[in-house]
Amino acid sequence: MRTTLFSLAVLLICSNNLSAQKKKKITTPGSTTAEMRWAGFQQRQQLLNNSLVKNIPFRNIGPTIMSGRVVDLEVDPNDPTHFFVAYASGGLWETKNEGTSFTPLFDNEIVMTIGDIDVDWNTGAIYIGSGENNSSRSSYSGYGLFKSDDNGESWQHLGLEETHHIGRVIVHPTNSDIIWVASLGHLYSDNPERGVYKTTDGGKTWKKTLYVNDQSGIIDMVINPKNPEELLAAAWQKDRKAWNFVESGPGSGIYKSTDGGETWTNISEGDSGFPDTDGMGRVGLAYAPSNPNIIYAMLDNQDRRDSEEEETYPVTRDLLRNTTMDAFLALTDNDINDFLDRERFPREINAVDLKKDVESGKVKPADLVIYLEDANSMLFDTPVKGAEVYKSTDGGKSWAKTHEDYIEALVYSYGYYFGQIRVDGQNPDIIYTVGVPLVKSMDGGKTWEATSSQNVHADHHALWVNPNRPGHLINGNDGGVNISYDNGETWIKCNSTQVGQFYSINYDMAEPYNVYGGLQDNGVWKGPSNYEYSY
Image (cartoon, rainbow, N blue to C red; front, side):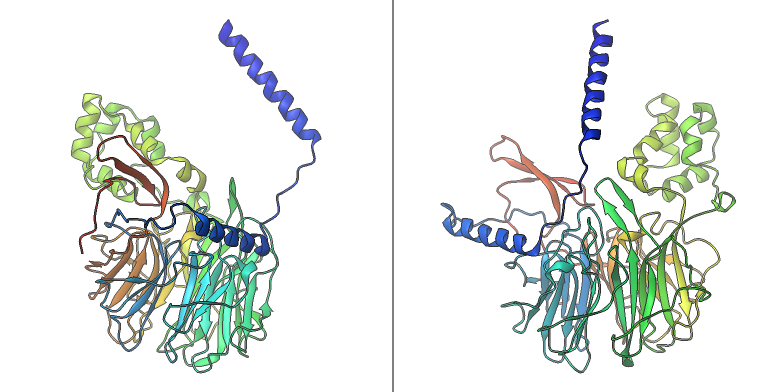
């Protein structure tokens, strides 16, 4: 009786609160202005200068087994052992010995978050487009474009602070005064500082040359490797809130410029052959270096699959939700193992051991579904078409999908998190696209196969393909940097940079005490407080 009365009281209180809220005018909080953010940064600097412990140095205690999320790579065309690595929230790092060691270059500015970088290899100037562009809830905003002329010793701010998240930075190959910046815009609010910005005076002044609407930013942009007057830009309409994410919209599209980015034409609408629907999500673009008339586009297609199109398997989540012990034991080991592989269970879990556990009562078949369906998967795992690759052989006038079947188990329904495609420098039929995992095609996108997952993180975000040495890849992922010389058959791990993305940390009362932390896509780790890195 007391329980019933308590429940009723709670219900009445909630009802009264809801009624009161309905009477209030609901307003959406505005975004924090650039002026407010700069004032906050100055206040932080003042607090640091006045701190009683300002002269006590921090001591790095790891971990070193993984790095944070890589968003971009820029490799020296004359020496591929020298390259720069940009992290989502870990700044910019440089290696001159093929990833054996790294040096941080961007630790003391107003932000450390990066969306894209470019290097003018003629002058050595480094450009950072700040603010991660992957549009996750852990993607923090930036403060515009930064430039260094002294290899990261000092940085100059070049404006565009209201862009927040920059999709791409391109420096003209022969005139460093000309720079194009693709702005994705604010993550959680509408704003007009989206589109393509161009400068012809090295960043002193900017002109916005492409604008779609206040929800559509430019997520990718590429330049014709043989004609710098020709550029392609991918517009992406989305609406991200903390509680919801609309990943596509009518503002998405592919635009082309033939006058150095001054004017743009939509080349993906109408009867172009590219999907022209509200389900058009994030798009990644790539020219074939050996033949720029060939263009590839990786589309996150948020259109729903027709029910008859949904691929069926002998073992599915729906089957396991309601199956009995006897029915589960009657399933073949191959069908169970196929389900485990498809759903990316740890390799230690297999059909033989599972059947033993189910038969003994330790595990129920439905437990496998409970294991999979956390809050994130319940939010995003919906039957969308997902990753699709389109090809143009006439410079973008017309498009055709390269494959007949779905590219399964690549980006699932969260293609907003990936969106990169690359083409081999010599063979335009060899292409790569990133997701979970990294996949490649040797026949122009007709068929796809995964590269090796051994010694490499599952989530991939950046890829450099050596234009002069087939099979040489540098991969950036949620675990750091990996290098392959055999087209992804084997990988070298280069994760000495200690820039893991911790969501939260805590400690215990042991002597010496231990530190615990949860990382973005890298699990929960425990380590001793007296750890010292061994070089």
